[in-house]
Length: 255
Image (tube, rainbow, N blue to C red; front, side, top):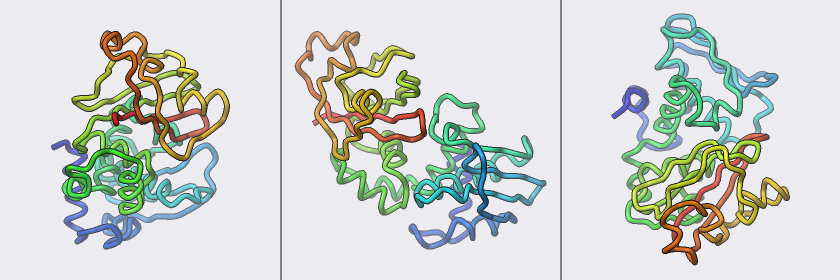
C-alpha cells in the first residue's frame, strides 16, 4: 500500500467516513486545520498555500461540474497531507490534474491520494467485483462516488476484474497508456498520432464526441503490435472523454 493510499485511509478513519456523503471535503479540510475558499483563478484549477500545519485551499469558482470540483479539492488535500514539508505553494492546472503519468512524483501522489479519498479501494472493489466492464457500470460507479467517468475508469483499471487499457492523448499525440493483465494488445508508439478511424480520432479530427461506446477495429490502434497478425479482425469497445482543452482520455476494453 502506497503512502498516498495510507494517508487517504487515515483521513477517512479520522473523520468518521463510512460512505460517500458522510463527511464533506470541506469538513475534512477543517479537521486538518485548513480553510477552503472559491475564487476566480487564471490558468489554474486549484491552489494550496501551506504554512506548517495550516493551509488555504482555493478552488477556481468557474468550475461548475461537481465531480471535477471534488477531484480538485481532493488533490489539494493530498498536497496538504503529503507535501506540507516540501513546497509551500502548489498551483494545479487542468493538465496537472489529468496528465496523470507525466508529471513529477508529487502530482502523481496527490492524484493517487484523491482517487483513494474519493473512491476508497475496499468499497470500490465491492461495487465492481465480478462485473464485466461496460459503460453502465462506470456511470453507476461515477454517480455513487460523485466522480467523473474518467476517474472511475482509471480506478477500474486498478481494481476491476476484466481487461482494460487507458490511453492519454494530448494535441493529437499519444502520451501514455496503462493496461491491465489480460488486455489482448500492448504496443502503441509513444508520440504517435491518434488513429483517424477511432473514437478518439473522431473527437480530435472532427470534434465529434460519442456519448456511448463504439466498436473499433483493433488494428487501427495496434497496427504494430505483434499479436495483431493473429487478431486482425478483432474489435474493441472504445469510450472517450475530453479532460482538458488539449487532452483526451480513451478507454478500450474487450467484449
